[in-house]
Amino acid sequence: MAAPENEKADGMPAELTRPQKLAVLLCMLGPESAAQILKHFDEREMELIIGEMGRLELISHELQEKVLKEFADVAVVASTSVAGGEEIVRLTLEKAVGQSRAASIVGRTGRHKDEVDQDDLLRPIIDADPRELFNAIKTEHPQTIALMTSYFPPEKASAFLNQCPVELRDNIVERYATLQPTPIEVIEKIVAIVSRKLGVKATRGISETGGVKSAAALLNALERTMSKTVLTSIEERNPDLSKSIRAKMFTFEDMIRLDNNALQKVMREVDTKDLTVSLKKASYQVKAALLGSISKRAAETVKEEMAFLGSLKAKEIEASQTRIVDIVRRLEGEGEIDLNPQEETADAAA
Image 1: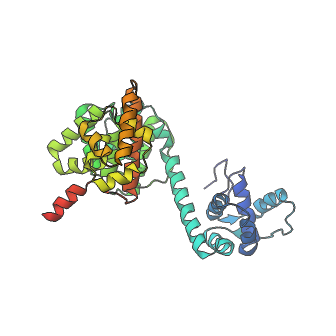
Image 2 (image 1 turned 90 degrees about the vertical axis):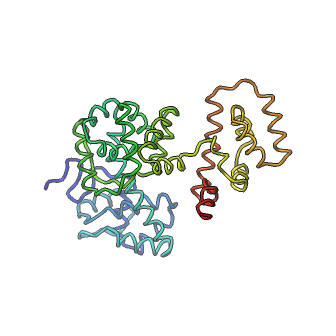
């Protein structure tokens, strides 16, 4: 099969980037010399070059000569094709930075490539206008729509759901939350269909997504009233699923769900100004919980500052509350706190 116009027969594009040129050169020099050169790059540059080395296959004599002309101070000129790929990457890195760091960098390079592939695949669809996207897939089965939207960022998915009729929207979110791993071939076929309807070109390479955590992120991105409506609808059909989604959603008012130990960990990282602003319109229970988790002196200071606060826009208050919730979610993700300690205690007792 003929290579694309912008790509050479050896798999390299007609115009090489700096990391690609360096990758070709280092493959030509071999692990020993390449390792000595790599030591002079920082880790991020090293990852980029190694990533390009890993993508190389056979490097033609023509390409070698082209690269060598740009590195006129290199004395060695190859006369045969040389190999790139994972083995040259491993040997070069191990000689440059040792076996342990080499394994770490190769691992990150592989993940970076997967992320780029996924971004290339979905970008034209994600960038599409939500109304155009809805018109393109509205006749598809709700399961297909749920699978497709599960690859969107929460903000994009919520904008798409805003175009859907209520019944379809609730159906999609419920299916979204219960998605199981799907064969990559099926996903690529769906992407190809949607891409054709939108008039965009799809490429290959995506990873699995969906599930309760993604559904919670999606609902957090929806307008609050709509989010509650969707959850209520799901609860009527599947109470257990609704409960699982709620547990992952966590809003500022849910701060009262945290035990005192968790609250103290959160408060240690919260900016005093954010705390003061966030409590301006908070419920009595939330105020009591948060102020009760800091020292009396600090609590008095916050109360005094609140008394001098003028009128604030709702967006300002929500922004401060969001920053605090972000801290909660980060600590939960790091395993520092538990968002549902009371439920776990009750389950253990049962």
